[in-house]
Length: 93
Image 1 (cartoon, rainbow, N blue to C red):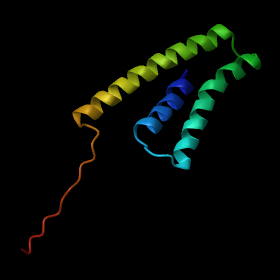
Image 2 (cartoon, rainbow, N blue to C red):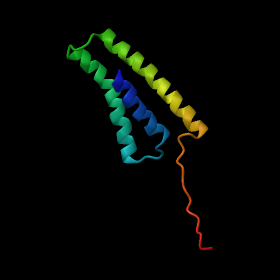
Image 3 (cartoon, rainbow, N blue to C red):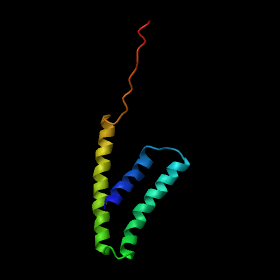
Image 4 (cartoon, rainbow, N blue to C red):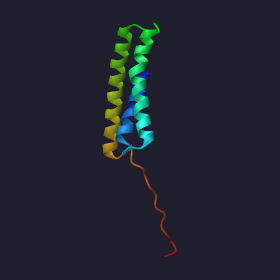
């Protein structure tokens, strides 16, 4: 469940914040998508969880990811997450 929210948030930030076709952006998107897609079936294959457990984790993690992205985008729209730049004024003039 946490891996869906964490890697999904990284995937979303890779789309939202990074523009262009840089190799590190593409690598971030591929790695985070692979973690989201492959961890669940690997847990079933290894016998650690039932398929219903993995499905529930995907659903709860997806809901948590949706809430997190909603809060992030609301704060970004209000300007709370904007960088604050301090300007040093020249006092000699």
